[in-house]
Length: 98
Image (cartoon, rainbow, N blue to C red; front, side, top):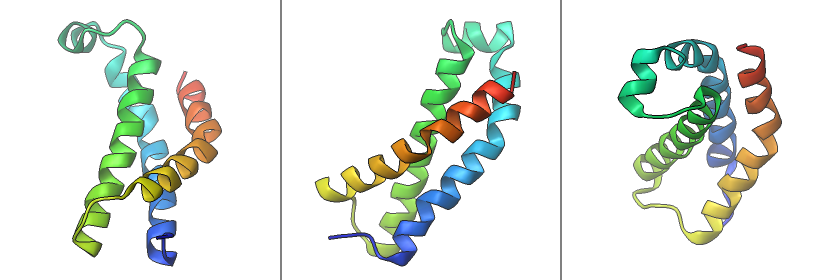
């Protein structure tokens, strides 16, 4: 099944919201307290992983509410393509956050 217009536009909106939150989140994750609590060395890598996880989880939750089921393998591939296509913007937001 290919995503319909609703499902196709939703990841873009979720990614835009995630990108907008990166500057705040990266500042929080650079503190020693956060590093000790979550045990990571590189805040940028940590924020990238959390951001991607947040995007997938947000979309899966909305998809489950709208369609009453989880993604199938083909749909997982589609969402991964959307995320990969926006990865330069996500990485740019991390870089610009300083």
